[in-house]
Length: 292
Length: 269
Ligand SMILES: Nc1ncnc2c1ncn2[C@@H]1O[C@H](COP(=O)(O)OP(=O)(O)OP(=O)(O)O)[C@@H](O)[C@H]1O
Ligand SMILES: [Mg+2]
Image (spheres, each protein chain N blue to C red):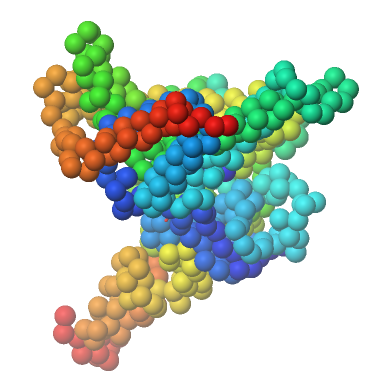
C-alpha cells in the first residue's frame, strides 16, 4: 500500500494573467503506516499538494499511483479513493452543515453507503475518540466554540475510517491546550489503528515531536524529504526559506558552540534534556571546559 | 473549475486604454453598442471592424483572453443564428421537411452572429481593462446628477462594488466547501433532479453561513472605520479628466458620426 507521485505539476489559472505554478515536479512515495509532516512557508503549495493525494485536484502533468493504480485512469473510482484517503481541510469547521453534530458526522459514512445504524455507530465512535462530551451530540454544530467545531469536523472524516489520514493545519488558530489535544489525538490514531498520517503544519515544534519523516516544501517543490534529524541539520537553509528549526535545535547548536558537548541532533525537548543531562554529568566528571 | 470564468475579469497591462477614465470607457462602450445595432452596409461594417481592431490592439490585452468570453456564449450564438436562419421569411434557397432556409435568413443569421461577436469583444475590452472598483467609481460619478432627484447613487455604487468584490470570494468559498464535502464522499453530479437538489444542501448551508458571517464582519469593519454613507466623503483618487480622455471622447464621437454617415450615404449593399 502506498501513494506514489511521479513528476506532479500543478498550475493555477493556466492561460490567464494570474498564472501560478503551485507544484513543480513533485516526486514522492508515501508508504503505509508512516507518520509524515509536511512543512512549508505560506503559499509553498502544501494544501495544493495534499489535495492531489485523494484526487480532488487533477495534476496539470504527472501521474499519481494509489497501490500501483493510476488514479487518473478512466476506470479508477475516485470516490472510493476519497473514502480511503481522508482529508481534513484547513479550517474544516466551515464545512459543517447539518442540524445536529451527530448527523454531520454521519454524512461521510452515509456517503460510503453504510446503513443508518452502521453510520451512527461510526459517528458515535469518532465523536468519542475526539473527546466530544456526549451531551453535545444532538446540538447544532453552529453553537460550538471554534475548537469544538474543529473536533467535530475531524470526527466527520475519522468516521469514514480512512487508511490514510491527511490533516491540513489542524491546529491553526487553536490555543496551546487545544493544539496538543488535537495532535495527541492524531498520534493516538496513528498508533492504535496503524493508519498513515500526513500532517501539514507551519510549526516545526509540532511536527518534530510526532512525525518520523518531514517533507519540506518550498515554492512548489520538495526541498527536503527525510527524517526530522536529517532535515533539521539543514537549519540554516530552512531559515533562508522562511522556516525555522525547533527552538531546541538552536539551543543545542549554541551550547555546542560555547563548548558544551551536547548532541545537536536532538529534535524534541525530551531528547535535548537527556543530552544536556549527559553533557552536564560530563562536566562534573571534568571532561569539558565550559565558558557560558 | 469554477474560477475559470473569464467574463468580467481584469487583465493588468500598461496601455492607454487601461489608463482612460472609466467614464470614457463606459460612454465609449455605450456608443459602440448603439453603433453595432444601427450600422448598415459594407462601409459602416468596415468602420466598426477597424475601430474594434484598433481598440483591441491598443489595449495590449492578448486576443485569446477575449475569445474566451466568446466561448461562453457560443451556445446562445448558435441558437440565435439558427432561429434567424430558419425563421426569416423570404426567397427560399433550400427546403427540407418543415424547414426552409431563405436568402434573407442566411444574411440575418450571419449579421446576428457578427453583431453578437462584436458585442462580446467590445464589452470584454471594457471589463478586461477596468477594475471593478474603477467601474463603479465611474458609474457613481457619471450618475451623480441623479442624486438630485433623490436616487441614492452613492449607496447603490457602494453596494455594487461590494457585490463585485464578493463574487470571486464566494466562488472561491464554494470551491473550497465543495471540495471539503467531496472529501467526505459527497457526490454533486449523479442522480436524478431531486437527488441533485438534495446534494446541494451540504454546499449551500455552509456557503450561506459563511456569506452572512462575511457580511457581518464587513459591516463591522466599515463601521469601525467610521463609514457613514456618501455625504461629505472624499476620494483618495478622485476621477479627473485628462488630455487623453478628451481625445478619446473626440474619437468616439468621430467614430459614431462615421458609422451614421456610412449608414446614411454609403449603405451598399
Ligand atoms: N484557488 C487558487 N487560485 C489561484 N491560486 C491559488 C489558489 N490556491 C492557492 N493558490 C496559489 O498557489 C500557491 C500555493 O498555495 P497553497 O494553498 O497550496 O499554499 P500553502 O502552502 O497551503 O499555504 P498556507 O500555509 O498559507 O496554507 C500560492 O502561491 C497560492 O497563491
Ligand atoms: Mg494551506
